[in-house]
Image 1 (cartoon, helix red, strand yellow):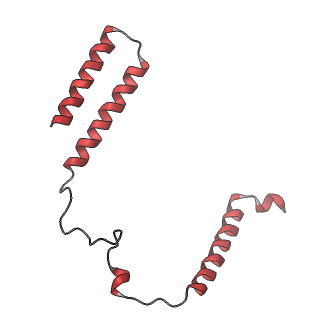
Image 2 (spheres, rainbow, N blue to C red):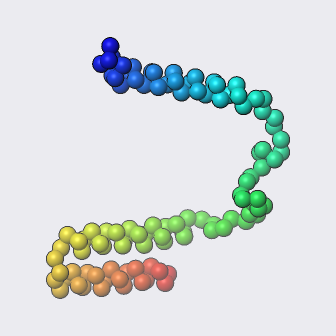
Image 3 (cartoon, rainbow, N blue to C red):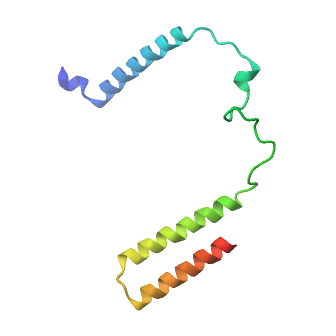
Length: 104
């Protein structure tokens, strides 16, 4: 009997049944819901929601993503090699690329 209860399909069904019972008890304790305009409004720490888009488009995201991509791949390449003249030149090129990316 113990092996049957520990098998993944049976354990899933037992946990799903327990979760359903907890859900139904919580739903009964919550009481009836009342729809109000306050419930459907945007909540942002008590402040009014912004009226304009903070950063239009995906360009700021792509700049940050490219920065971290170059940085992480550069560190991986430098970490797998030894300290040589080539790796020093690669590091200088990496810093130059990151500087050009930051300055735009």
